[in-house]
Length: 411
Image (cartoon, helix red, strand yellow):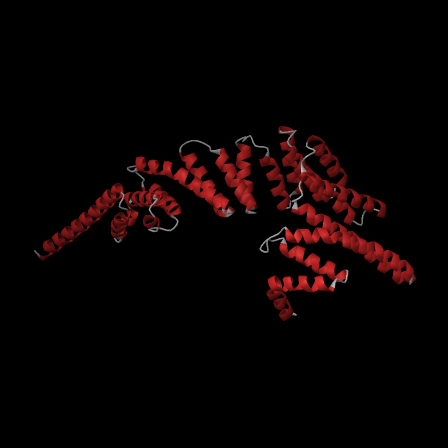
């Protein structure tokens, strides 16, 4: 008799628990349909106190709906009910799909997925606009996965995911997505320039060349691909071929400052390379100046051209300085050294306005700011401009003093 009574009590308790679970689920749904998100949350949390319910697909469908409504709500109080509601809705839907083995909730899941495809895409746009490229890529790729679940291939969204990953320097991830786009024959020439550039970053010059050749065959007139091919030749030191390709591109688009900048960078590299004769390096220096000047003529706010032109003059002066020092040690001809000094100081003074302008073009939190400041410190020191040196050293110590002290302590 006692055993029968115990079984009855267990059955009654189980029935009571099941009834409470069902009641909270119904109430959560009802409040959700009425738009009372705060009350819906309370009932969902009540259901989640029962451990066995965590394996119920219906609960996760309900949670996904709740987070979707929070994400869509314009009520500030409701928006505070959950952090990152889109991501949480996405996680809940994944769990619901996993648990819904008998497809009882298939329709509700698909309806939620349809809404989510737009929400995660919008999250990607917002992340991209705030320059959080890692998050942007993840959201765009999730939007692409939603499109796949409905039997389509949203290649434009996949391209957005790949581009954001590339901008985030996530080479493996972006490479895989660009390869998928290539496989899908996505009609976008930039995937080939990206595949080539990423291959270079990953140290595979040969594969990068193959990608760019494939792209050039498909889009022979595309300037971006021509530009990327030239960059590959610059990277590998084939100055002559890079020059040929860049001039071909300039003939087709003579108003493109980026092409002149690339041409200048190509000659700049040659001017710094001791493999070439002094005459060839001087020729390259003059060509680099001309190309950078042309880029600035077309775009006066082209920072890279401004800084590179300043660095070019400074490095030319440094080369002449080193040769003058070497000659002085060999001949002890101080009169000749004075003549040499006029030349390298002239180069350094030509560099100054460009480097100072480059500094003024940057915000203090720009990654390039440090490089420009260091260049100016060296320039003012070598030209004995004590007032300017003191001023720029104060700027340097203000922003990089902690690093200097750390290095000093290590020494």
